[in-house]
Amino acid sequence: MNEYKLPSAKEARFRRKTYKAPIIYDSVLLTESQKQLGVNLKYHVLTYGCQANVRDGEVISGILENMSYTFAEKLSDADIIILNTCAIRENAEKRVLGVIGSLKAYKRLKPDMIIGLCGCIPQQEEMVKMIIEKYPIVELIFGTHNITSLPKLLENVINTKKRNVEVLSVLGCIYEDLPSVRQFEHKAFVNIMDGCDKFCTYCIVPYTRGQQRSRKLEDILKEVNELKSKGYKEITLLGQNVNAYGKDLDQGYTFGDLLEKVSDTGIKRVRFTTSHPWEFDDKMIDIIAERENLMPFIHLPLQSGNDEILKLMGRRYTSKQYKELHDKIKSKIKNVSISTDIIVGFPNETEEQFLDTMKMVEHCQYDNAYSFVFSARAETPAARMKDTVSITEKKERLQRLNKRLGYYSKLNNQKWVGQIVEVLVDGVSKKNPAFMSGYTPQQKLVNFSYDNAEIGDIIYVEITQGMKNSLNGVQVHLGKENHE
Ligand code: 5AD
Ligand code: SF4
Image 1 (cartoon, rainbow, N blue to C red):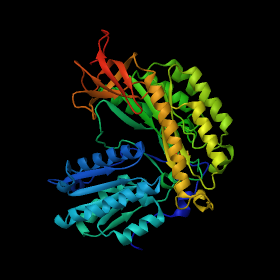
Image 2 (cartoon, rainbow, N blue to C red; image 1 turned 180 degrees about the vertical axis):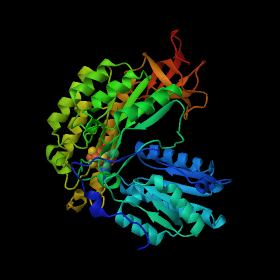
Image 3 (cartoon, helix red, strand yellow; image 1 turned 30 degrees about the vertical axis):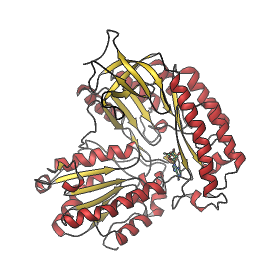
Image 4 (cartoon, rainbow, N blue to C red; image 1 turned 60 degrees about the horizontal axis):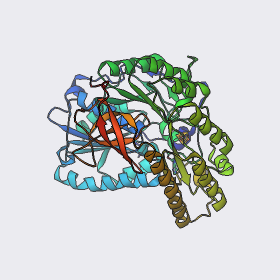
């Protein structure tokens, strides 16, 4: 183990109040040999987890393409496969370990194939040690803080035929000018910050992604303007906690100010994720209500509707404060849709406490929700809490909760029947190849029949049916479509 650079759980917890993250421009400068390393070779990146990981996956692909690797559609054609991983819950980790197991067969057929692992899983001290010990086929390991080390590490693996591991537990930097291969040509993710300092007691993210670091406003605007000039119609501003944007800078800007500036660029659609009910200020609500290109869709994670559980979770708001914020957003932003995240079965959650969550669901009637059974994450305070609730009970609560969440999703979707909505076209529908699909401003997935629609168009669709997870519709023409 000693030859490797491994993360430290103790250091990952560390925060410095006055920390100013260094900004690194021209983050990935390749040597001549690194630029040629992938000639005639292919890569594949398997990304799991949140949008931050998706964005990292785009950057990893960008770095590999700058090193002359080309994309392999099929895993079996790849000379390097990188697993870009998520550690948010145990099942996310198990899935990745299962995939590593299944890659053994590829490696047997193609012994020179390099299997790499990055993202949140190797940021955990015990996990990475276990992987090093039990999964010798993984020869390249790096973390969330040093994606830019990929060229150096990969070159080492190829030249020395030895495993290379470098995972850092640091407060973190801000990397600019990163190469990337974006997933789409009409919509894009734009990181505005990384890391999280909230330390909700169940959550691994603050340990795996480091201290909160906001990008400078001008660097974000530069990226948005570049995307706009390339024809992008929609951007999603990404951060673990977007409403805390800028608090670590001396710019004097808040997230509301950033939204205003991004709206001013004139890009057609602006979204953001994810927000915390804490620090969600009026400026944010007012500017979204005011500006047409700021989409009326808010993800507002509840986690629990019970005050004692919220306190144990370290969420910094009460159920009353959450409800007031929710109601304010609903009343101020016309036609807004609201989604949420809920955890059931937090250690020792009683039936009564769970019912408070159910009550909140009845009040908020969410458009969409992600619900999870609590999963103990090593090193987090909640993992050390003694728990008396059985997994059967937790799963039964999740089922009851999902039934009500599904009921309201469908009810809200059905309210759109008969209305004409704007849809940004994503491509052929996964449900029906004769249809196309896309999203409304409220982030509702629509599958629709069409006569004149292409990927990236913003068109009109009349909604004919509302189901739990999507809408059906028919393209209509109002004479002001945007096919540019
Ligand atoms: N167990 C279950 N769900 C979790 N989440 C985060 N950590 C855990 C955990 N340990 C959920 C939260 C968060 C979402 C991204 O994942 O609801 O908002
Ligand atoms: Fe995790 Fe809480 Fe930070 Fe969200 S705000 S990433 S739940 S610690």
